[in-house]
Length: 421
Ligand code: PGA
Ligand code: ZN
Image (tube, rainbow, N blue to C red; front, side, top):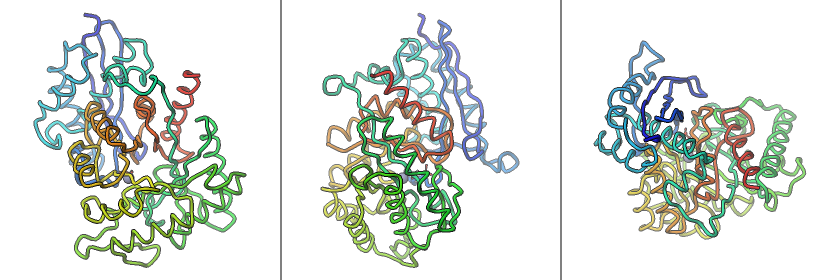
């Protein structure tokens, strides 16, 4: 058979932070090659699938991934070889079973995901389909009139938290351009980003960027980031609220202190309870066109998430990242408890494309919105752009308007929009 997998090869490469990650290539009998590389987080949720690292301090400060590479080449390859590449679901299932652990710690979610995504790329090429179309076909996904919609980008133009250690507590302050066409959303994002750079410079702040390409200025407070962004939107000639809305990912698990049950906002010199956090968000949502908050509360603070959803869920997109970790079980729990109303999708949080699709389908069946996301450590791989279009995701989150590993995804979406037109 032409479409059987003949050869699988993994190797170590470097991500956007200069840390090792894994790239997998798959060769089919007919000569088709598909490859994919795997991203890596910094503010990783404690419930994520395990990213296997060598922990050998003599190589890459312990961050090498040669064990994961070996797991692909020596353990996964023998069971996948000879399989029909179009049977993506059963290939992913086989790897999940071979690992046999809840969090994929034996083979490593990075090893498994590399193979899973490379299979999808090889399958798409073999069928001569663009990847977004192939993902729809291989999982038999159907949306109204079989239409494809382009996502609204949530662009992280101000970086803080663990992505820019010296700056504000809010990890990500995002703009969400509202234009009709994707290319106009991208243009708007770029213009606002550069306007913000100009304003920061004028006020004497640094215009260096953080891990996701947003400015990482040491502002005097968290709210100052929102004020500056509002000003940048106007300076760029857009109307806040109408043309550009705001989102944020405080990634609050990172500054939540479990012992004291408090959120420590260093830039504001404030220590807040969950109730205090909710009040703060409500205040911001009144003053600014803030329509999306991701991980507003800590990853296991279910009770307060219920309160947050009750008071803000009607007007605001409340996205679960570390909370749901692209995991069907955690999402199911959230749905039952009326927690959040949107799912952040990070394929490496769960470790296979199939499981990510299952989480997306569960979310969509319950009216939860989808935001397909990069990681703070990325590569030039653009799979998530195609995934977002394949599932008609309302949003994509792939960083700011600088750093090519971020722009590669936006540029892929431009290509897809052209193709669909
Ligand atoms: P991470 O951050 O990739 O470092 O986990 C992204 C996020 O929190 O959304
Ligand atoms: Zn997040």
